[in-house]
Image (cartoon, rainbow, N blue to C red; front, side):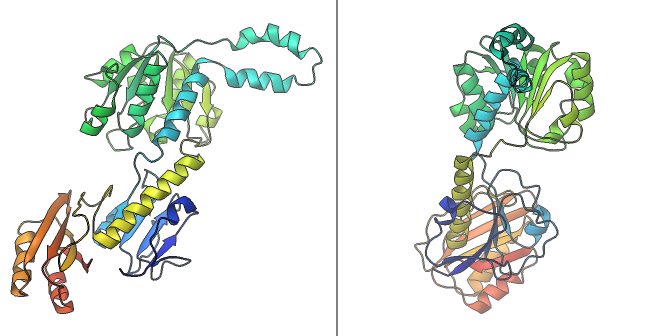
Length: 389
């Protein structure tokens, strides 16, 4: 197999990078890199070399990567959904406790009175100011039942909560993993109207940005607790601040500090700790490395945000070619015609699309010549062609 260079834009866990096979080298420059591993570094203004074929994001969000630019240049972008799900789930459960019990207020009182020689006695008098509620028997609404939402819903069931879940795009995989004790909400309004606690676990899309706002809050119970460990833009800061001030929302727990949320009375604001565990960073690194290496070595695509899922295992034929192209009519016909003219037989193929882009992976009976590869690349709509084997 070919030797390849990998450039790490951030510190990537060695638990992951040691998964690269012999022949892969971590380098300090992107100039000749075949792959990039990144966490939070901003890549939007970067120029990409012609050698770059894959970017692995060790995490779920890809707002730091120029997806459209990568697609046009035939660069496959991977993320690692679910790799940090348990870490976020555990913090959400902690958020439920922080919302229901004024643990932070009590701890701060202790610090403020640490020099009091009678602190034990006075704490007994003060503790009534920090009394809260138990979550057992309370209704939790989970909006979004992906990898994290399912784990949160199941954990809350085990804690004795009455859990309602809403997700109009629930995957088969998530449905299998979801506890049968979770009630299915047909519309999101059911979550708003019934829940004592609401936690959101959806991506930041045009349809979800600001979904927790004055209108949706008005349909919620008085004294509702709202948790946001997904994306900061899902909650309208001005509207949640107003609801906290009026007592409509009792507590807002968020993992996204900004100038507004940090100063909200009644908000518990954490410093984006969701995936900040050693285990999550290791899991994300391993998953990113395996996906990038599988694509570079075999042409297989798993968890790409810009090209479709494709897997033909390890090539057992004379050769394999990978073709990234636009999703336009007759593309496959033109590709197979060009191969026929080059006297190439196709042993197997997968052709899949994702939005405006598509991917064709082909096993062929013999190696394609450089001229044949060049002729394929001349077909209008093809973005990148490479010999995998």
